[in-house]
Length: 316
Image (tube, rainbow, N blue to C red; front, side):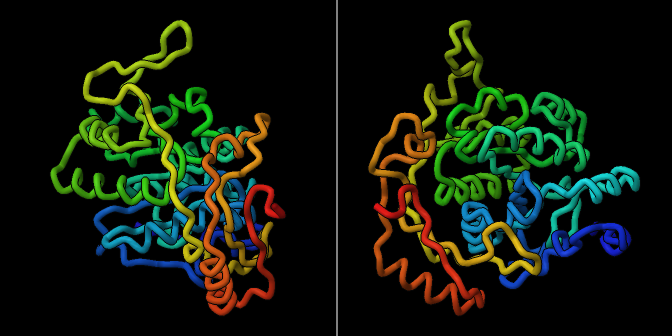
């Protein structure tokens, strides 16, 4: 059931356009036609999340899939967060305006360490237990809760500090990984699999780490606690596709208020102190013609008057 957003966004709420989900370029797919319903949840205020290129790319890729619906949610500002709590209204996705608990799966982008506490705040606002242990217990008692996962550089570099909070963690690039997860979810729903059985199927996908199927030894190493899961999780590596960079046009000024097109993923310098430089190996350059076409199409589709080229050490 949709949240009555007109009762929430009253005069004292600053920047209400953050929560309307009616931007130019928003997908707004029909709810009943989808077999799997995603929410990509960015644990920052809208102005930051709507500018994140990875968030835009994965949103476009998931909505391009048949019978896959992808909505979005962001960390509400303190004024709306207080109102959600005072009115006992759960945190909602901006396009469908449905509670996050109505979706099949919630994906959080963990791009930096301080975003982890924002994730816990969003789960609390949504009325979702914050640990996978609590969610598993609730599922055994008949509660129908979405799967919660994280991706991004911080999750990939060391998922263990956050392992108790997520049902699984997506390691590496998500362009190919997330559609594969969607196929397993659709099949699992069709076969009415239990939460644990569904996670066991997801654990077979390269790049998916399911913490409950692993235990940590005294030396800090992590080992499977059942034979059906791989000993080692391999980070996924995908080729950038600039066409998916053409995204939303917000009605409020965002952090990066322009078209952004990725021209390389990874870096040729290999500096040992650089987390993204080490985690995004090997360096993959995008064909220049693909960049030019994405810029031309993106400027026409969005009406932006500026674009930027994105990569590590872009001037190289």
